[in-house]
Image 1 (tube, one colour):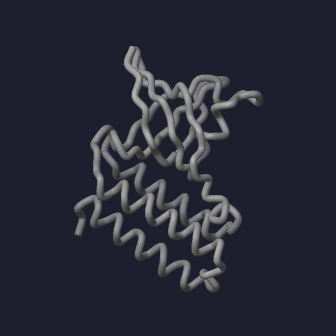
Image 2: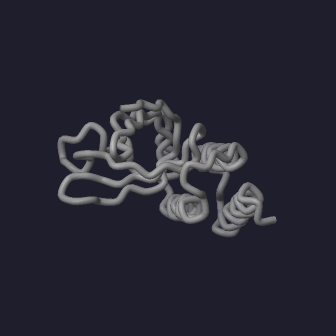
Length: 155
């Protein structure tokens, strides 16, 4: 059994079985990881709420036969992004793009910096009320997508 401590942004969380979840996380240390979170769907789960998409977490990954998330604690919840439905939907599209294009266990410092910095700046902008119109929101998401394309080496 090997333990790994990581910092990551939760990309997706999907139900697996009755009470488990399969979670995709973009980590600074390992790139994208997909791991099982046992009992994360239970109402009394202490782990589940920390693994919701769009959270920067500190976690512990345990490798046995299958990688499992043993612990997770939210460091940044991006609550301001979550408070604006349009911005929240855009942020989830960014995370879906990252999940689809990032290779499993392939560390990419530029991708990590691009995603984490963009989400932090977006959260600050929403908190400050600096996203007044739908046009400026779309421009911001377009710029973030351009940066992601560069991080993946597409441009």
